[in-house]
Length: 320
Image (cartoon, rainbow, N blue to C red):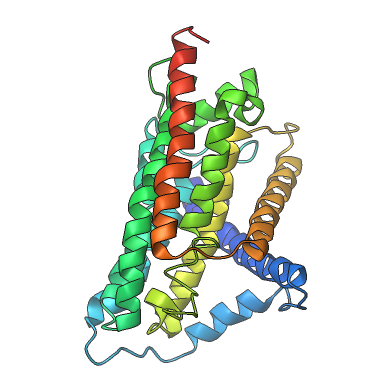
């Protein structure tokens, strides 16, 4: 009989559940964007079919590619997302693993999908992928810094000056004292987090290194096919769910009842709203050039996250 830890890791709330929910959210995002742009869009099950189809395709490796890195680099991001969805709590649904420093783990893991893109694209020998990798690396250095500042702001405020790196304690603090989403000190951080999500998911205006048909086509994935490409798609699906959970823990970890099923439905509804919001932004925003995207990330979300950090420090010192 499977232990509870194995079930949590492979089936629910991580593993199979998170993967299926994430693939569904990817399909929903495509439909919402299509409808907002006056198109019909694919059926809701299209992304499931795409992933299944890719597992039945032959793996093609470019002639000059570094084969091992090219084939196995997608597993880095996928393994990171799978592990983090086991560690992280879900408000009212799952308590997580109660690791006191899981926020630090989250900061490191959040960068793994982008690192997998950089390694896989760099190993493909494609000039388009090389350009995309260069762009991804530049953007990642900035948007990950934004995420670190937001994380430390939340941790310092919850600890009253001493940083608390337990996601469960961050969640419980807001359940007792109110959500940070309604605290004006965290409003700049909320906006910065929205920009971070757009950048890390490579949605407009940061659709610069991937799905940019104007200059790099499919970017770092241009030479990938079959199972490696399917794993990249599955990683993206799980990353959407992880980002939704992180947003809820940081800013709105409210459970509406003690009933697991009702809280699970509430969590899924919040995730649907989260995805539809970013789908709307995807549909209406144009894309930056790489220099514009880098400067924007370096100035706007960085400044916003620093404003929240300063407000938090002043608050815990009793100055505001």
